[in-house]
Image (cartoon, rainbow, N blue to C red):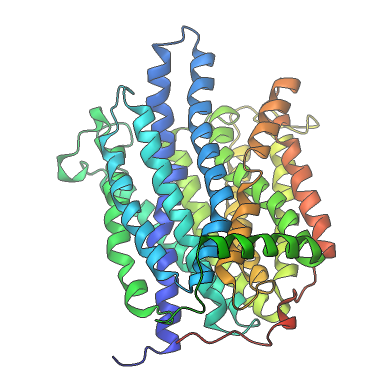
Length: 465
């Protein structure tokens, strides 16, 4: 078999982001997530007489599913990563989780519009989510082999940007051909394709098969062009993996730069995920937006994410990832301040806004663009920074720890938002803790070595055949 060039391996690696991003953009955030919330609300309305109680139960059901999935990933990812590194095999794990991912995304089509099977569908969605997150861990572990520490920032940024463009295209396709805007037609004034019936939610439910087919088609370059050694790095089993994991955890505690990065990124990534999850809720509850406005908001954020992530990768290559992360944190703190202080009546209770003014809508569209742009860039730069703290022979284990830090406190931001909202009686003031999480993450970055500690093992990436 002819040798696969490094350029093709990089393109194949980037194809993964393109293949999986629609799950997050269409499934988690802008189409299936809101649809599931509506279906579960209808179900809980038959259980609870009070509308607000039904809404709370619907939201709690969705986030409890995410919490359980996040905890499962957090506590198993480092062990599976250590095992994969001990045996030297990562591609079989990617194949396994890809095969698991497909039927569970397709299963979203079977969501009962009456809500009678919401728990089964929630299980399917989160099993697909777990599969996607585990694939990401192993795919990220391949990143150090694709270039030097100076080059991986640009590669990471380009891959993430390509992924966001995939999410944008997926959104456009769903809006133009599938999703009913309320009058029986799509945003292009077309009837939903394939005779989909909006009355039974088929236009929204079709997102499951759409995501599955998209993944099956666009993951092909990854499996064709990405390779790893056919022989194991060394023989190992579960006991060896456990021993290696203990050493890694002990080593992470002793490596102060890595420890501060893992904790800092845990805080600012948790805050960012809260913004992703809460953006549509804020738009709906505070600004009174309809679903089509929220979807346009999503497109604006996804396009900005694609552009800004590419630009962030350029600056990562020139300046390193830490400055990129810091600038993004400052932008997101500013966005949070606007969210806390703005409503349809005033800015911070000081500057009055005329009734019916479009200014709050315009400002929040800008905020959406900022969240998408800064969020995409901070994701790619954090992945690049992790490479700088990764032992070249243990990359999967390292990204398992990265996943652990990203999921260990996944409950924290939603819990604090709920707590502050209840204590203050204000939807807006509920976001104050998110600002604190960004500030703490930013402060811990001061103690992160801009070059990481990768240099102690190697000046450049370890080539992989």
